[in-house]
Length: 354
Image 1: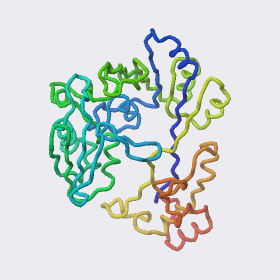
Image 2: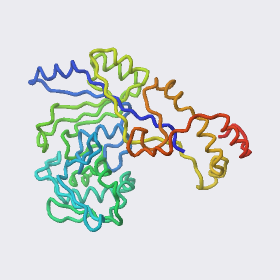
Image 3: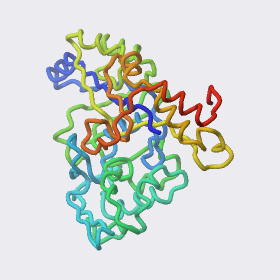
Image 4: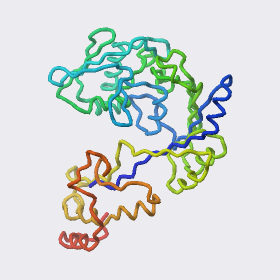
């Protein structure tokens, strides 16, 4: 059973700070971003955290990107074509791209990175692109991903960390790559102090450098949402990600701040063990009536109003109700405590259930 889906990312921009930056072009232009937590490993193959994605967006370009309209767009790959009955994906690579260590990005580097994602112990990308069985170099700027079966989500996966290409030279050098990551993005890694800061500097040889407007980005992890907002209001930060629902009205009333919201491309759920060992041997795992009773006991509207100030959109599927892929024939069930009690009684399930 999928629980309510409340996913919203908030970015706050201190417009006055940006105006000051543009007014003094001779000075170093620094963008200071407050993160809700400290990212884990800065290695696209091993990383798991949401905030890590934010840092990677500045540091590591991907084979393809995804637009706000959910279209796949070129990035390191300029074009692509499905071949062999959709069991092969041929990608043409952008020429003249350099890694932040000065090495050229070519087909061999793409082959290295994809195979690293697939084979490196502890890889969190393997499952995302497990349909890929081989990477073939067609020429210096063309690669072919060979699939064991057609896999429509592959391009979407390549628009995230599975599509990030790292420098083979840096990845194979002695030491921990996550402490000295080298990619082909607009900003290069400078330093990281755990629980304090991650610093990136503008990469002068970036292939799309004319669109890079800041000289340095400093990411500061501040887990407390109220403290993050206070730092933004005081001018210590220029932007923060994620905002507590209870602070939204404060931001809206502050003329110096700009609020941006977006529904995320992800979901959270409460998963119930149905058939995996001894822990499935309980009423939740064995009787669908108990699971339905739990579903009927949840008041998603009340949760949204009380916990999230009515700002989010309740849901019961992997996409929100406004998404074109939402299955309208399975809408969010209304709370029905009486029916839930009937189902529990019919199942002879003792309460409370744990």
